[in-house]
Length: 74
Ligand SMILES: [Zn+2]
Image (cartoon, rainbow, N blue to C red; front, side):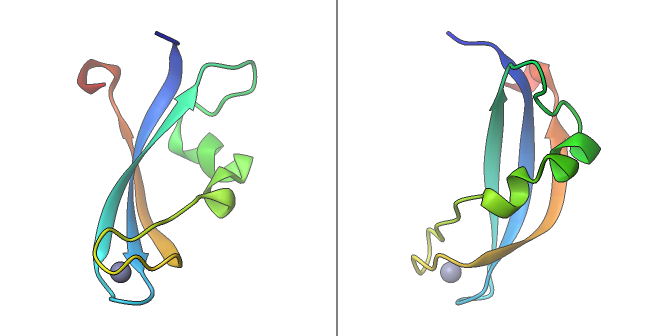
């Protein structure tokens, strides 16, 4: 089991069907791994995010909200 630096929960709106999809992002532990929402945004990871809508299989979505998931819930 590898350690995680942090886990985030993102709400992404699908551009095709206009539904909000909750997607989880686990960040593996690394020297410069983002550990809070601000660092995650600054890291540019959100722009490289692979989105795949489970409802319509759309591939384009925009991030509407990001929150950190506490380690206890991981
Ligand atoms: Zn969709």
